[in-house]
Length: 463
Ligand code: ADP
Image (cartoon, rainbow, N blue to C red; front, side):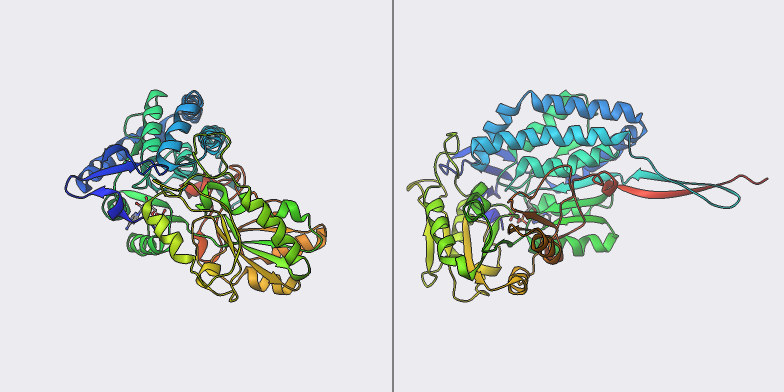
């Protein structure tokens, strides 16, 4: 989705980082050239050998120190996120804290990464979780800090080196995290941040034979291309792609809570778990639409550095054009909030009621504060509508009937369901998509295992 022409200056190989609330350039960062990627990979290969050979307790201790460095700089990291990504300051603080928590959680796994002993005749059979080697983590701009840590923290904990490519528009927090890793005492070369464009810096990471796994979060189009490239080397791959998640509201639900607009306006809707398909049982459709309209109109859109703000700007001019392109004049508007005029990339929270449930705005990922409201009749109809997209990332079910809640949560073809809640992501529970929303899982108790190869060793005990 990133329009790289908006953010790069090809003649100098530099990335201009803009404040999305004003459009001003706030920093210029050198893009990593392919030969620099190769040098970084070579350094990472060396660093990884030493890292994997360290005692587990020592690796855990260094990761806890990294977490402590981050904890001491929550305000600084949050301020950087507000400036380069336009996140509200409350969200940005939470995101910096999430990096700390991910590092602590991963550190707790280092000494628990135990294999199995399997009964065999004539000997002893053991399994080991060997690190994969060098892992490339390719990060989008929507949650630059958390998504960097979702990949990097468990990969490091499992004994790997990490080369992280942040998105073109948001390299600053990742670069700061790399400095904090060094300050914490992580070995030189073990965790490197390589800013640059996707097609040059990112593509080189994917192609490099010594990068043994890619963790990619971003658009489906780029994810599919990377999957094809990884296939050539049978390279390990985790994909977290888009979503078009349903918010399924039954007539017996707490309608006011179900109508919380944060479900699709948090982070200006630039969230792959955003509940942008609001499915409402027909008999409460009008009442729900009213509640939603009132709530949407009261969303405070403005300066992300102001703690009273609920929603900031979109990330870039390109993203603004993309969102505007979906909201065509023929679509009936159920609700629309406000947004600042003037510089910056602003779009008001908007709810539409397309007559056709298969309209592009109803089935494609807009990645802006835009939702559709669609009526359904019964459980079967709700399930049919919920699954009528190529995606399957998350979703919410609102009802007071527990049996129905369980039937629906089990029925929807998505990786992360919430009942009477809009939350999706906790670092200690698994996260990932069905269908075209992704491949593999991140986070949760098995996060470290995804960065290992299982090795089986048989030891004969018979002379
Ligand atoms: P979005 O901009 O919607 O987050 P993208 O898929 O365009 O989604 O970008 C996600 C990440 O993938 C960014 O870091 C981007 O630079 C990177 N990327 C884009 N194209 C490629 C590519 N061909 N190879 C590797 N990485 C890429």
